[in-house]
Structures are given as C-alpha cells and as structure tokens.
Image (cartoon, rainbow, N blue to C red):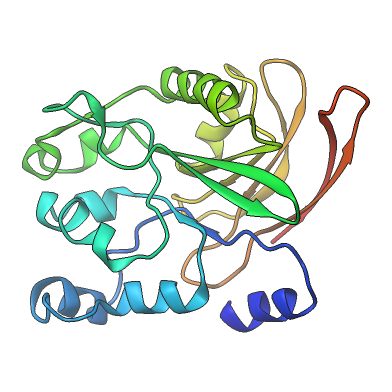
Length: 237
C-alpha cells in the first residue's frame, strides 16, 4: 500500500490517506506491543506515521481492549488524528475521540467525519466500553455535518466509517451532506454509488481488509458561480 501511495505522491497527486479502524488488533506483533512491549514505540503507530495517514477511524477491535488502549495509548501512537463523532464519553458528554479532521490539499479544504458501529454494544463485553455511549449513526452524522459546514466551511466532506457497506446505504438514505464515504468493517468489498436523502449519488468504497486491496476515489472539483463545487468522482478497489 505504501509503495502505491508513494507513487501517487511522487506524481504530484493530492492524496488524502485514510484507514477506517481496527488498528489495535489482528496480528501477533500488535498483541506484543499492546501487552508486552507496551512502553516501546508501537509497531502500528510507527508504520502508520511512516506512511503518512491523514486520519484514522476506530473499530470494535480497538475498543475491545478497554480504555487503557483506545483512550490512553492509541492517540499517542499516531501523528494523525483518530476521528469518531458518535462514541461519546459518558463522563463529559463529549466525543471520546476527535469527531472530525480537517485536511488541506491542493488548495482545497477537506473535512473527514468519523463514525463507528453502535452495534459493538452487542459484540463486546460492557466493561470494554463502560465509559462510552454510542449515538445512533443518523443522529450523529446530521449533527456533525451541520457543525462542520457552519464552523469549517469545507469544500468537501468525507465520511470515514467503521460500519458495513449495507449500513452505509441505510445511513445515507436518512442524511445528506457527504460527498464521499470510505468505509470498512465486514471484510466484503464494495464500490458503488448510493443515493443520499437528497437524491444525490454518493461514492462509497470499501476495500478488502489487511492490504488485500486499496480503495481509491479520484475526485475532480469544478467551482460554480456561487463558490460551491461540482464534484465528479471515479472509484475503484
């Protein structure tokens, strides 16, 4: 993945590199740095920082290890922000993670809003997420799209979701405002256009996991007379 992304950057492409989460679990080296060499530089953080990610999502396999990992350690691993708008810290009433990130590329301002699956309440032991309340996806999406538009005025809004592509379809039928969705959770490849609540077709890309595929969206923005943009996309995985 790094070799491919590096080629794009060397060509002068305006690359925004994202991952939808489950970074803290999945192979023996990750377990080792989580639980044995937990004071050393984490292999996942070192790798992600080297590759130059712009934002990272959060998944159930990050939350399952409890607050000591997802809150106390993971944010220190990465130079890039972890974004998730609908995991709310019960103690503060605020998002446990940064709800969105702003990335500037090629003169454009890109907002990346993160969401994760509330269904992890049914998959994990309650002690793993004892301090988290998971807001419903449509509620959180509508709130943070409005917040981002009002406060950041981005040229482009990307959804970075740790939810299944079938759930993305359901979510988009209830909200509008996203220009692109990059997602991953159920290990099923998906690459298509889905209509949102306004009838606009939104590109949705979910590549296969563990670097089997790279999901890619090429976006071309053309400014309109009112200073908004007409966005055309081509997608592949």
